[in-house]
Length: 181
Picture 1 (cartoon, rainbow, N blue to C red):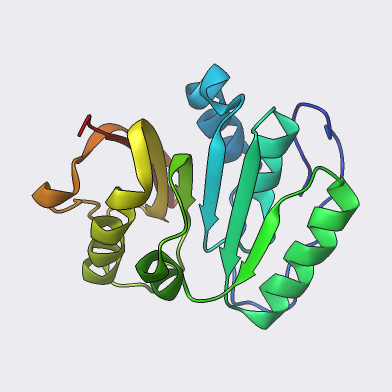
Picture 2 (picture 1 turned 135 degrees about the horizontal axis):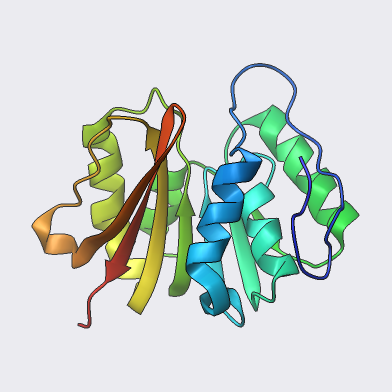
């Protein structure tokens, strides 16, 4: 894995040991950032289920103002912390479960990456999106990575609406936008 563009272009990233995580493919990551375009610059970013930090670090490399990485897996945290130091662009690492972090309230974000384990049931993801909605700024974007064919349907009360959906091999990426309050 590498940073694709920006200030840290070409920097290698370490992956967590073991088979518990699945990295975002380079092709999918390129597409996500092409769709996001200039919206990354100056954004306050939240990277949930951060794993190695590939998405949040890519955002920092492309000019994001700040990134908060939330991860609970020990092997992933080890790789994430190593990558944050190696890339050298900052970022805050939170060692916690996503649901606990969201319940405590972690601020307001312009861009959120949600890349949960494929085994996470759709109903559980929907519940997390419902809580997450309160942490997304008006007009903010939530990018969700799921296995192909999974349902991503945020509850109507979230004010998150699906604006795009693309398939990459065995996975899909969904873009949700937070409507104005």
